[in-house]
Structure formats: structure tokens, C-alpha cells
Length: 288
Length: 134
Image (cartoon, rainbow over all chains, first blue to last red):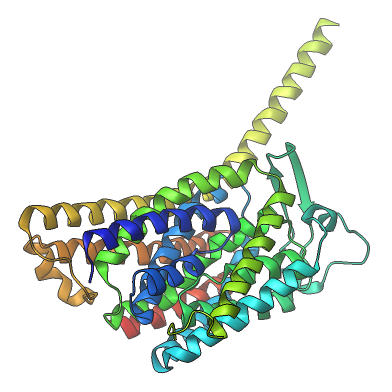
């Protein structure tokens, strides 16, 4: 199955996934899984396991740079990781037991929901960051979640308050379940949740999401690895490709405008939603 | 006039020293996390490339399935591509775990009880996966 052409194609796809993943705060699994199953004809469970490895590579490669550049909110990440890892374990166990058809179906529904909610809101992250007024939530204050980040876009230091910690925690748990279930990083849930619910500026949300997905994916990657579902040859090509991609993607994010990142993220979600809806409705027949 | 300027310079240098001290403290943890994450990926990629080189040299087939850590030893001793490709993948999976362990140590050092508790929960969740793995 794993011919030289397949391995090389996979490395190229992984490079692009790493590039987009590090720029958008996602693991890149949403690109890798359809590519592996549709274009390369790899079994979905092997594809999910391989993708989880790619997600860890994207996260570790990208997060390292964002942590060094102080974009990542380490405390917020730790708080939400409690939810994502619990969710991931539950998701991975369910994923091994459940038939493939349901996996595709769940994938489609989740992506469509995220696309719709992101498109509805047009504001930029920075407008949100400055909203003052009422007191911080007690939990946010106690856990010292609010933070500061430096934006190279305009050489400014921005202070932001984290809001709705409970809602963010719940969304992260859901992201964790889908991560374990579908082999994705869950960034397409975490980034909108942090940006829209918790009011974390876009770049900080992307960096913090990238930081978290590695741990989330590791929890479920262990389980897939132990089942013998990881194909080491495929995984190796994915890791090497993704690592090269993140080196470029992180450089792009640090310099680009927050509004552009958000716009591209919305486009990405919309495209993903349409593709998945088409598949769920059977427009590319025979996929399921 | 000259003494006033000299005093100003002393105050300025003290402020600069203070700022450097604060920056290094924050910088240390961030730097350490940077090196752990980056190092993990680089070491993993090195093992994987070595695995591919072995496959090219020996003509042995690439592995199709992951090998549990306890049966990995013999594969590594005999320098098989399967051994090093599996090892590279495992190193990558353990990289985020090492980062969580470091976070636990740093929160413990700050005596930040709430965060020590949360990090411990995350680590426990990861260990539950490892127990299933072994």
C-alpha cells in the first residue's frame, strides 16, 4: 500500500497541513484525513491515527515558536487542557468502537456548525480585547487567566480579559472528544471558542490553541498507537512534512494582520463545511 | 548639575537591571518550553530519517503497524527500519507529555496550588492513556 509515490504525496500534503495548521491554530487533521482517505485510499482508522501524529507535530513545531514570542497564554492553556484531555480519552475509546459511517457523519455536522458560528460574527479580535466595564469573573480572577501579548503587526502590547471561562471549558471538552474521535486537533472549535466566547485576541487564540492540541492529541494518540493502528512509515512522512510546514507558517502568523488571520479562518471553516456537507449528502458517491 | 546627571544615570541603570531580571524569569520558562517542544520534534525527525536511511540500505520493508514500547527493544538492537520509525513516532507522542511535566514543576515552584492541581489532572489523563498503551 505504501508505495514511494504515496509517501511523497503524503509528505507534500503534510507540509501544506503544517503550514495552514500553524497559521490558523488548528492541527491540520481536517486536511490530512480527507486527503489520506479520498486521494490515497487509506483506511479511515489508520488515517485518523496517522493524522493524530501529524497534529502533535504541528502543535509542537508551532507552539514552541509562539511560546518563545509570548503569544501563548500558558495559564489559559493549562485550564482548558483539563477539559480537552478528558474529552480526548472519551473520544478515542468511542472512535475504536464505532463504525466508520458515523465518524464521517459527525465530522460533517461539527464542521458545519463551527463554520456557521464563525461567519456570523464580523468584528475583529482587537475591538473585543478593549471592552472594559464590569468586574472580571471570579474564576478568571482567581486563576489569573487574563493576559498580555505583544503584536508585531503594529509593535503594540495588548492587555486582554478572558471572559466566560465556563463556556470555554465546555467547548474545549467538546473539542477534545472530536479530537480523539476523528484524529483532528480540534482547533476549529477551540479557536472560535476562545476568540468569540472568551474574547481572547485572534493571534493569542491561535497560539494558545496550537499549544493545547499537542497534549490533547497525545492523549488519544497513545490509545491508537497501542492498538497497532499507527502506520510508522506514513506517520514518519507526515511528521517530516508537517515540521517543514510549521517553520514557514509560524513566521507568517507573527507578521500578519489579526483581521486577515480571522478572515482566512472564516474562509477555511466555510470551505470545510461545504466539502463535508457535500460528502455527508453523498455527492461524491461511494466515499462512505 | 553633573552630580544630578550621575544620579539619574545610576537610577536608570538600576531600573534597567530590574527589568532584565523580570524578563529573564519569564523568559526562562518560555525558553525552556521552547527547547523541549522544538527539541522533541527535532530528535523525532532525526530518528525517522535514520529509519528511512536504514530501509534504503537494508532493503527491509517499511512497517505497516505500530509496535508497543515493550517489544521495541529487539527491533532497535538489530537496527531495523521498523525500530527507528516506531521510536521516532513515540518520541513525538511523548514531547507534549514532557512539556506538561515541566509545567507541573514550574507551577509547584511558584506554589500555585490551583495550577498544580489542574496540571496534575492533565498529567493523570495522559498517564491513563499510557496505562492502556502498556
